[in-house]
Image 1 (spheres, rainbow, N blue to C red):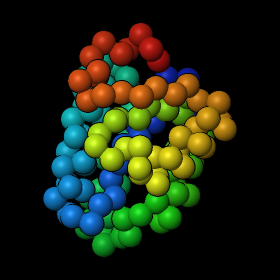
Image 2: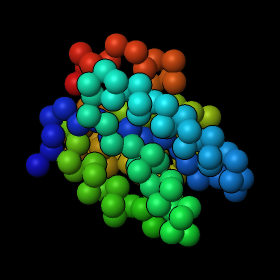
Image 3: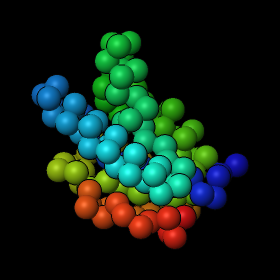
Image 4: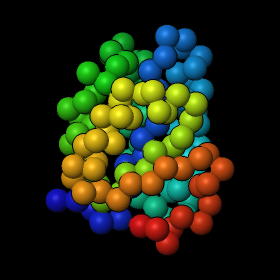
Length: 122
């Protein structure tokens, strides 16, 4: 059952360069923290999975994380995309967006600078 206030925050992650992946993780952490500070219940697969993947030496691509992310999407009511560089080309973000639409989640595209005063939208 979906939590009516829960936001699934998608953002790009995969990249051949580990520094790009780290930077994307850091920006997702900042966004998740900013939304959490507003009282928004946020799940970010990048925030949750980055260190699990690094420390556990797990695969980085959507194929590995797809099943877990689908379960998390099903528990959410809102689907927001953090529009970092590469978001529109991200295989994972594209697949998550399609799933979110299929589940009837409300969809919103956010720039990193758009993270203030969003509590009224959940």
